[in-house]
Image 1 (cartoon, rainbow, N blue to C red):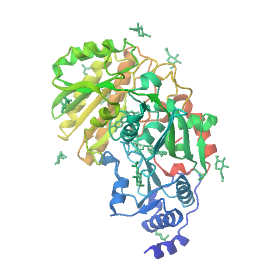
Image 2 (image 1 turned 90 degrees about the vertical axis):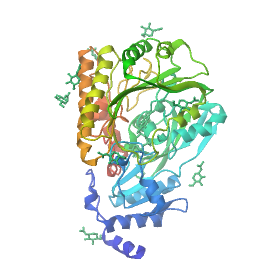
Image 3 (image 1 turned 180 degrees about the vertical axis):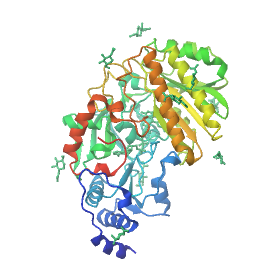
Image 4 (image 1 turned 135 degrees about the horizontal axis):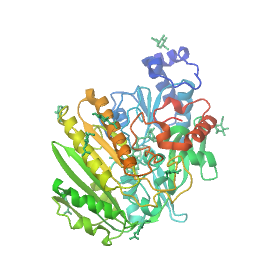
Length: 490
Ligand SMILES: Cc1cc2nc3c(=O)[nH]c(=O)nc-3n(C[C@H](O)[C@H](O)[C@H](O)COP(=O)(O)OP(=O)(O)OC[C@H]3O[C@@H](n4cnc5c(N)ncnc54)[C@H](O)[C@@H]3O)c2cc1C
Ligand SMILES: *[C@@H]1O[C@H](CO)[C@@H](O)[C@H](O)[C@H]1NC(C)=O
Ligand SMILES: *[C@@H]1O[C@H](CO)[C@@H](O)[C@H](O)[C@H]1NC(C)=O
Ligand SMILES: *[C@@H]1O[C@H](CO)[C@@H](O)[C@H](O)[C@H]1NC(C)=O
Ligand SMILES: *[C@@H]1O[C@H](CO)[C@@H](O)[C@H](O)[C@H]1NC(C)=O
Ligand SMILES: *[C@@H]1O[C@H](CO)[C@@H](O)[C@H](O)[C@H]1NC(C)=O
Ligand SMILES: *[C@@H]1O[C@H](CO)[C@@H](O)[C@H](O)[C@H]1NC(C)=O
Ligand SMILES: *[C@@H]1O[C@H](CO)[C@@H](O)[C@H](O)[C@H]1NC(C)=O
Ligand SMILES: *[C@@H]1O[C@H](CO)[C@@H](O)[C@H](O)[C@H]1NC(C)=O
Ligand SMILES: *[C@@H]1O[C@H](CO)[C@@H](O)[C@H](O)[C@H]1NC(C)=O
């Protein structure tokens, strides 16, 4: 088998078609097998190629949500940056479509999946604290909960994801919103360096000395190569006060007033997420509370006066709190799409619109599929959210905070995918119109790239940065190797 496919390889070399994204349809299964075998022959013992039905293959291609899965020809787990380099060279020279997966939490199909060659970064799994420099090296295959667990006994922490299972790589490369962002900024504002395999296979360390790549990697996701390692600045971390609490629908007005007041308090140690959800013909409210100290200030007093149906908040460790936010199986959860609905303030009108949209679409979509859940997650970040770092691909405008607001829809039937995408676009558009009518200047409020639904125009996320990002991309990747993988493309 291996010999046959290797022989076939000689005849199946495809000439690079410069600038044109390569369709998997142009590669038959023997082409793809041939590329897989070429990779297997080129990589060191630190790395390995897997074919279906190996359990490693299945694990490699799985995502948090089944709607993001695709069956690739093979998977490869590189174990060194040099092997990533070999792999990229082979994929580039054969123009083979590929995917790069970190934590596998994207909800956009094709962003970290492929029918070509699937690269799973799981072997980059080291967390190495350097207390002298106040930094930590984190492998690109880790999830945030794994990193927090290792950091827990060290007394320092990083600015990363908020729930169990989310990957370090995708979250960081798209910007990164954290419970700690009100104090320290986005995750990218806390990166000290990247180990990056450039599209031509060169392994390099990127720091702020490299104007263009530094700018591009701060929000530009997989356009500039494959990151193998992140170096993050650390911050002291003690116990926190945190938890999640459920409220019944009749507390909506009280929750609304509490959210509106919360935005006036400017307490950067406090962070909340207010989830408005419709599921199984019920509307419910679920609030995440976080305070970066063992006991909170008075900042949550309005919320704590509201009768709850379930849940609790207590002094706990950062790692334990994130670990507890594990509502779904880590892999192959329900079909799910995310969308973004950025505003500059959660006013009465905006809060009401989110409630109405969640209920309206929840009820309507539930008539098509009983298993539908619609969630609007309001994130009242501090006004200084974007003031902690310099220019970056995302956000394109750091002059004022944008409240990113994620929308999520979950369902069962694949035949409803387009309907669900339509609903998310409709909610985003309705909220945008409501914000304008509310007097908010959202014309330049970028959609967070890690929430944006597939098909979102680049300028809605990257604004005035799109042209510069295109130029950087053209200079770094003249052969358009990264165009062979999915995601937002400059
Ligand atoms: C339940 C849930 C909770 C979330 N919570 C947060 C949150 O608290 N804060 C926040 O900011 N976002 C959050 N998000 C959004 C999250 O940032 C994105 O889903 C992000 O894509 C997750 O990264 P990943 O590595 O898990 O994703 P993957 O699906 O593995 O990758 C996402 C993208 O990054 C690219 N990529 C992955 N690894 C590399 C690499 N090594 N080099 C180059 N490109 C790479 C992939 O090719 C893909 O295009 C959440 C999403 C979900 C579903
Ligand atoms: C499939 O690939 C083989 C080997 O490269 C090639 O000989 C054959 O023509 C290809 N078939 C199609 C339908 O493209
Ligand atoms: C990292 O992965 C290797 C296998 O590639 C495994 O042996 C090792 O235990 C893992 N380390 C951690 C910290 O998970
Ligand atoms: C918080 O900041 C806003 C605007 O910057 C200001 O109007 C408000 O008074 C501040 N609140 C407190 C409690 O300092
Ligand atoms: C917190 O609440 C959840 C859900 O109500 C419950 O399962 C959990 O046991 C509670 N934890 C504590 C420490 O009380
Ligand atoms: C709620 O949303 C629906 C659908 O967008 C719309 O028709 C209706 O007018 C809205 N109701 C209110 C009170 O805004
Ligand atoms: C809803 O989910 C259940 C359990 O996962 C499944 O058996 C059922 O087929 C789903 N319903 C629809 C309409 O897809
Ligand atoms: C949303 O969808 C409804 C119909 O379902 C339509 O009437 C309305 O115009 C749409 N609004 C936007 C802003 O897309
Ligand atoms: C809206 O904000 C942008 C920058 O984000 C600014 O250039 C523009 O002048 C603002 N418009 C108004 C009407 O304030
Ligand atoms: C690879 O790309 C980088 C960045 O454009 C460039 O500096 C380097 O010379 C290239 N290496 C080779 C071998 O072409």
